[in-house]
Image (cartoon, rainbow, N blue to C red; front, top):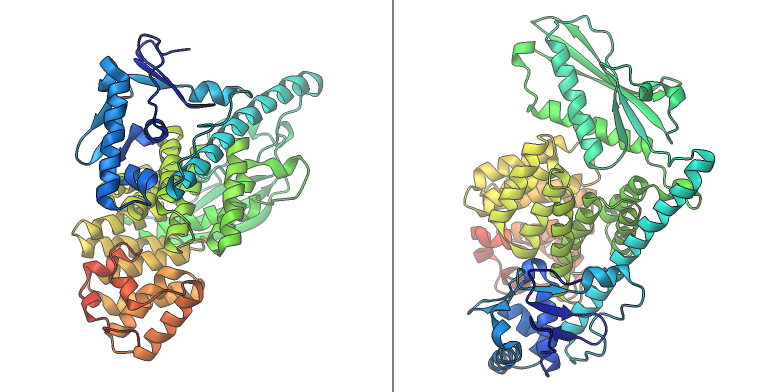
Length: 555
């Protein structure tokens, strides 16, 4: 069904066809003109740079010849559209379609099994376009699979529940309040700590949170619940105004078996600061322990199809690094989204592509960026108030677009939503470093690595701190941080790049050559010249003086 405000309809599935506002066929004759319209229609904000389009459709031609061909296709489109030519906008840098003046058959095709193939029959003969088209067809297939999975799941529930009263079991964490012998105001601290833990667990999709601190909700009764696993999170407060001791504990329900506990010693309730690094580290430690207790990914059976299990397994694969682990992680995140359409699973898919960029494991950078941004925008649309979605998206903006203002805004949002989010602090620090506040940025990244605790991404916090330290001129600390990251993840490329430059700057040429050799095991073409290339993923080096002190030739 046509939108009432659309002037032009783009039929993208099956052989491409364009219908103008009068219902007449106005399809341009040129295949590349049709491809150009499709690429804009399927792009974020229906907008692309001239350079991006030219690289995809005329990448095999010279720059001037490609630009002339692009102008010719734009002229062909305007002529074919006639009075509807206003749907297409073009200036010296950007091409765009006005979203209020066109619609497509994308949503209808997602629902239909006989919609045909995306851009059926279009053969451009350009590698960049073919990569883009394969990616779009895969994304379309994923969306249709997701829609079908939701439909099937709703049908299964509708059939099963009236007969057996069956519901899908979920992990649960129950918030309870234990006895306290300290000052009454201290209970506010304990509740705030528990709230912070619960928020992070909800954001990551680890478990359903049931607050039983001030309620007689039947859900708090173990007999009425049918979860896969239930943990209780509770606190005890001891002491007075001179010293407060807060004990946090996780117990298995209904057995009440202690799984973990820890204490925080504070000088007094007036000195309490929920933004204190020790407090935030404790919050993240509880989250990490809870996740480890909850997540058991099994093969086969209904328990294998729990989205949180699949996602956490994907996270572990992602941070183990390597082509096989990256591919496995992406499939697990996609499978989690097919079960539960949450933005956090898409955010991890976007974030994963920053690793592919950093590790130089991609065939087409533009395609990689397009995929990452598409996942990022969809994630933010689905969960705009999830601090981890915002933090991961901030890293995508930094790595894929070097859009440090956008990264700053997203990172700010992340820590406003959840002050204990280490990824948010790290991305805020990197953004501030690139925006001219390297000292402040470095402190933020150091805070991030401090509060990350035992998280599987700890080595990346070290690497980001090394980058910020390099830009702040804290080169000795930067070396230490890069060495710490390298020790935790020996094949991770970013710290190897920075160590090769930092060691050379210090005159430690043997160590620098060793780092170069390790990089060349995965990047045979690596050299100091790569570090000088501003397109290479080591942008922080260009914000410091050490890039000028690199040896003129390979040692």
